[in-house]
Image 1 (cartoon, one colour):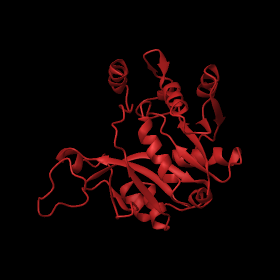
Image 2 (image 1 turned 90 degrees about the horizontal axis):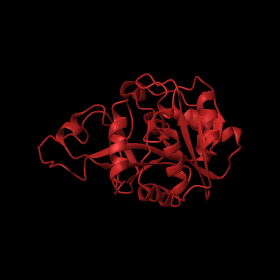
Image 3 (image 1 turned 180 degrees about the vertical axis):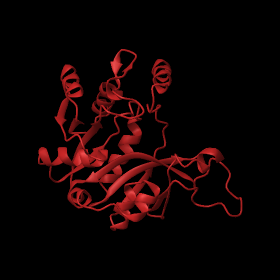
Image 4 (image 1 turned 120 degrees about the horizontal axis):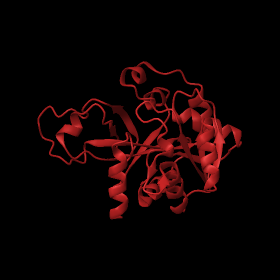
Length: 249
């Protein structure tokens, strides 16, 4: 069973909603530096690598001593960008954690819980969820939901409200209504299979790449994030929220 754990942080410069987002300052540090240092300080990973298509991010990473790898500009998603890095460094017999480059405040204990679960399974993907707290979030298509079996294996992800509350018995927050958190740990042994998959019909309909993996019979497990993460940064307006969070912590 793979024991090494490598974190890869995909960082694109050309975000449509927020160009240059990885270099945006949160107080006195760039967002990508905060994501990188948070991964380092959690003490889980044998290595942390920034994967970027842009020389500006590559050069900036060097200023704070980060290990960064230049990747192809045209990857359609962060998973394939991470896989390119795995191949370039010839990573074998390990777990690769895809840490989103706009999540500077992931709680260390949540990352630890994800890491601990990886030691229980092989040839799988492990991700995270938390409880949905409001009806609005349950009905919001931008909030991805998941359902899983008693062994924590995911049955389905959807933008639709699942499970559907036909008898109006759900009170929020509910342990039955789970919000997917887009942090993944991959057994390196299955990455080559994922790389070569054609997107499935359901993945196209929902615009969720992980449905392609489920369609191919890849096991995806989800563990609960029991500690609140800090705010992610999706747009320039979120910088102020991040700075307020930082000041309070």
